[in-house]
Image 1 (spheres, one colour):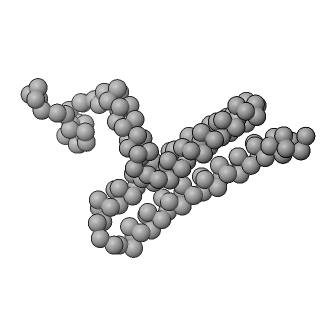
Image 2: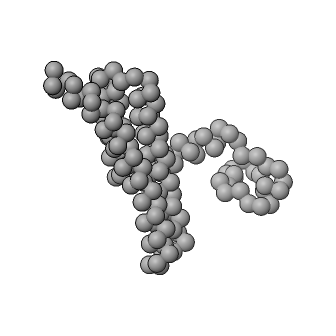
Length: 140
């Protein structure tokens, strides 16, 4: 490949068959770019990021234990993953079906439903982790 040409991002069956490997550093860079793009472009992911900051600040302020930290960190990671996956699914559906199609609606609604299920689970974890400590703080 000449020096002035860029390597295509999408590998084809031909390039995979030639044994061309995608550099690990490039894979991480692309993943980071995707996450940053999702944070910039998706309101719900920015809302999730705000709740993540609140949870982290509360965790330090209330000195939660290790198990609670693990639960909070898993919830934060899960929500970033679900919202980013939801964004990716919506983009692919929009590309494949620019007009309305019932299956496109179903795919997008199901992806959003996955993010909603994660948010509800995260809320329950947040209540279990933080509510007793906040109540004790306000009662005493």
